[in-house]
Image 1 (tube, one colour):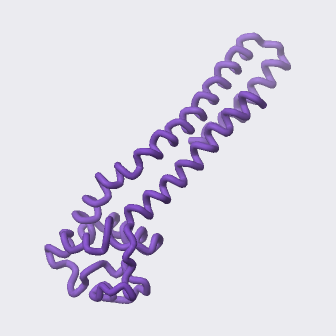
Image 2: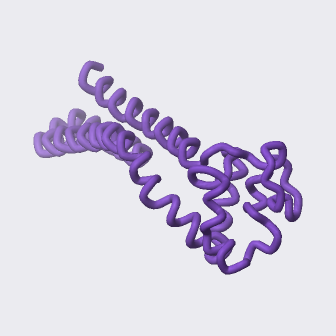
Image 3: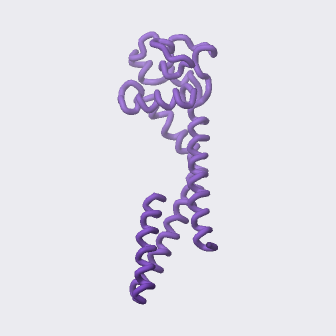
Length: 171
């Protein structure tokens, strides 16, 4: 979204230069309108990032647990995403590794001997999820790790969006 706003700024700048060069009043009015639109888009990104930063944890709590417990090893794309998440954040389960006990993956016996997915393991090997000792699997909550990660990125979006707006106003 911010990239689109940047490209629009470039086009608007060219329009503004042409409007001044040819002393064309309708182009100048269009230039002012487009600058205002760009400013509002950047401000909107910053404000929405700030607002959504507060809601990330709640949204994750509502949807993440259901997604993990009902789609793991049933939906290949979601399975791949969950495995990637657990490997990247070194975590296991939404709140704890015990969440997997109530998943469709375990209930329908798709897990074989595994108690948790192999992506929970500290060192990933086939069927390493059959042993749930702290030395073998990550005990960290994926919910808190993912929430922190998303809040960090939303904070950056907020600062960049509002920062650019301030530069435009005072610069």
